Image (cartoon, rainbow, N blue to C red):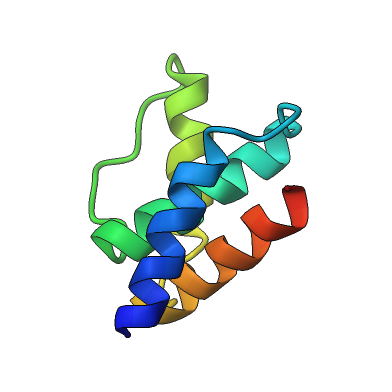
Length: 84
């Protein structure tokens, strides 16, 4: 787990230095994996229709429900590596 945590922390740092901005679907995937890895299953209230960005983020994170912290971290690391 310590190695995975180090890889995850490095991927988080690298995600801020990507050469080009990923498309919105990829950004939502990055967000959802990060939230699942750091906060676990989504327990927040779903934003209303007026908050389209918040709702998209909530939906993306909620789609990760049941994914373990370790799996979310590994998927995040793999995704950032594929974008670098």
